[in-house]
Length: 378
Ligand code: SF4
Image (cartoon, helix red, strand yellow):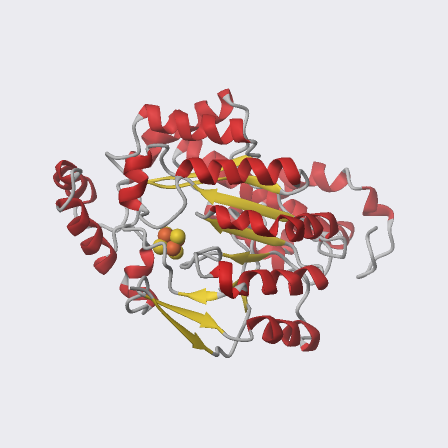
C-alpha cells in the first residue's frame, strides 16, 4: 500500500551550476518526492539520495506552483532556461492524475516562458499535450520516454508499476502527432547487461522508437550498481526467472559501480549503426535563447556534442573541450564580443585547437556586426 503525505518544501526549483549535455536542463523541479513506479533498478534506493522507503511513501509537495511563481517573480538573476522534471521521481506517476502538481508547475512555466524537458515512463503524460504545445510554441519543449526493452514481460519485472513499453511508444506517437513542435524521443537507459544488451533488443527499441516518431535516442550501456540499489536489484534477480544472470553480472562489475569501459565501448558501434540505419539523432537539439547567451549556447552545444561523439567513437574523452563547453554557459557576455576583442583564448579551458574549431562557426554569425553589449539578438 502506498502512503501519500503532503509536505511543504522550502524550494520549488533548483539551479544547476552547469547544464548537462544530455537533457540541457539548467533548473530541476521535482513535483513529488518518492516514486510509485518502483523500478527494481532505480538509483533512488542508493544511500546518496537519503530517500527511505521511496517507493512506498510519496511526498506531495504542497503549493509548489505558488512557490515557483514567487521565486520566478522575485529572483533578479533567474533567467529563463530549460527546466528538467523527472529525476529520482516520475512527474507522471499515478498520483499526478488526481494531484496535478506537475500540471500546475507547467502552467507557471508556460506563463513565464520557461522551456521544459520531461522524462517519464508513463502514458499519463498525454493529458498535458496542450500545455506542451503552448510551451513549444513560445520556447522549447522536449519529452523523453524511458524505454529499455520491448519485451513486455521483462519490463513488468523491471518496472512493475509503469506504463508498458507499447503504451509509452503509443504516447510518444500521440504527442508527435498532436504537437509536432514538441521534440520527442527515447531515453534508452539503463541498458541492463545480459537482459537488454542483445542485438535484437537494441535494434527493436531504436526501430520502434523511430516508427513511433521519435526525434532522438539517448543511450547509455550498463546500469549503475551502487550500495543498497545494487543489493535490492540482485535480490530481485535471484528470486526471479532471470536469476541465471546474477553471476555473469557480478563478474562483469567486480564490485564496481559501473561496468568496465570496454563493455560500453563494444556496444557503441552497434547502437550507432542502428541509429544511423533508422536515421535518428543521438543528441537532443538544444534550446537557444535570443538574448546575449545565444551564441554562447550554440557554441557550447557544438563543443559538448563533439566531445561526446568523439568519445564514444574513439573511447577517449577530451575533458578540456568538455569544460570549455560547460563553462561557456556561465559567461556573462556574448562570445561574439570576446571574439571581436581577439580574446577567445582567455575563455576558461579554451586552447588553440578549440579556438580553431569554433572560429568558423562564430564567423558565420550574422550577429557579429551588432553593437557590443547585452542587447537583444533578434
Ligand atoms: S520511474 Fe524513474 S524514479 Fe521512478 S522508480 Fe522508475 S527509475 Fe526510479
